[in-house]
Length: 168
Image 1: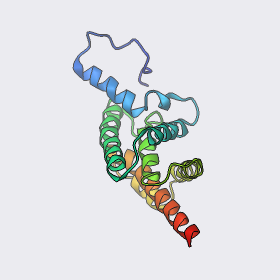
Image 2 (image 1 turned 30 degrees about the vertical axis):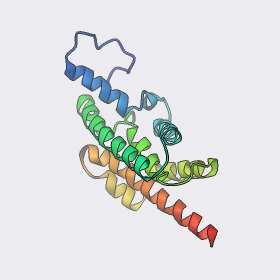
Image 3 (image 1 turned 45 degrees about the vertical axis):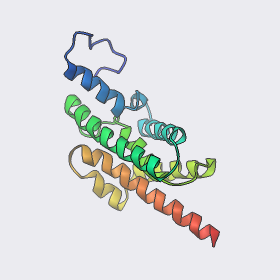
């Protein structure tokens, strides 16, 4: 098990590789949310909620944010998995944040929609039905990130469809 983020086991004289590993740990655990003793995935998703609420709205801003979180998250998941010698460790929660960003992509940020996306995303992420489970079996860091991206995309499609149906 890796030392916690706040551990003093990495000194200021450590190599840049170790400091890069520390950055990867901060990213992968969403600033330590992944260290939650229970429900680390739920806490990671809450980190995604915070990102959604803090980010500007619109096609370009939301697309850039999602792609950036996916790219940096994949790098961090790969680095941390290698450092810890595990695959998809429960402390890696940047994938949940990316999945929630996908779930909320181009949707209004009302309380009801944010809550619905949160609940549906957590259900799909935990139960791994069909394509979500298949995506999780992709090897390496892509598999860590991809199942949450698929779950988020399915939630996004469902909420967009529900909104369209309610307008009719």
